[in-house]
Image 1 (cartoon, rainbow, N blue to C red):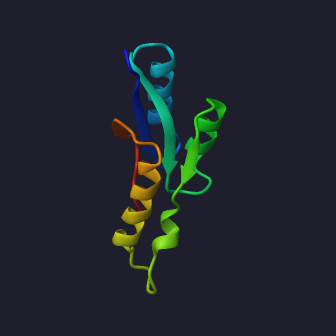
Image 2 (image 1 turned 135 degrees about the vertical axis):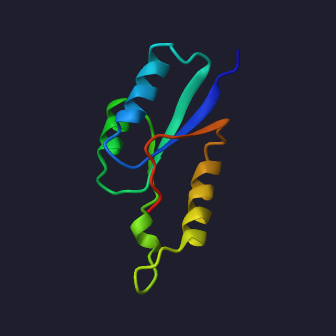
Length: 101
């Protein structure tokens, strides 16, 4: 059976991500592998949790997409996020406690 690739998007402590990653490793979610974790917050605990599990991490820091006056530039942020997602050609994208700002 061909493994399905998952990319997980998470922003915080990583409790949801860890539950998913540990379930995949234990075979509770058969036929899938986590290709990467994409996080939008530098220093988020989830980045450390992914590193402990030898899962590739990508940071698309949403703070870089604030315009003058603090307004969030969703268009540019989503463009960069899509560039990073496409590098992994995921079958599934999983949002695990992901907040985009």
